[in-house]
Length: 215
Image (cartoon, rainbow, N blue to C red):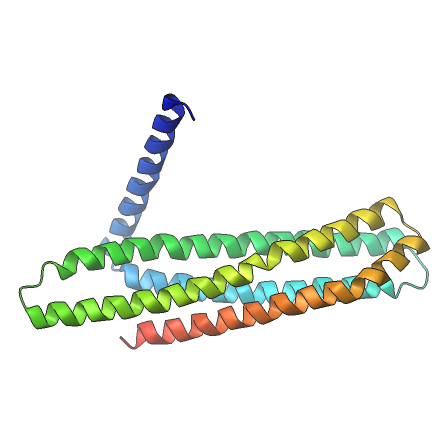
């Protein structure tokens, strides 16, 4: 990486950081603190994961329907399958965005919290606040690990979906249907693993939200 490239990249990162800082500052002036925003973003991520779980179930159902194809318009059946695949891609991208949004606000929240702890004149209050921060960070890390673990299961399933959609597209015949049947068991297993990871992540989100609201 050249010096010019590094300089431009550093400037870009600094600009993004400044924009984020101004954004959060503006929200706080409107009465929306980082803590409240963080909870809201975790809620959105949880809801998106719930929607994604249902979307992948729907895509699996369509794959299963294709393997049971007994006649009719195979191209129309392929189009339905491709639509499910495209919707699954959109949901996966949204999951990634939700996780990134949580990370962004949490970084700002924890940085501010650390700075404010140093401002206490009372040693006991400082220790108490530091303890709460450590606890919150620990719960947050557990949440993010669960979310990222679930997110990591998306791409392998999408890759399998893509292979089968492409194969069916190029071979709209009984042989292609037979190929899908051979792969169906593995697809079901992959989707089942994904859904289990999503459900664990959703539960972690609910636990985190409850903990933050009760502090």
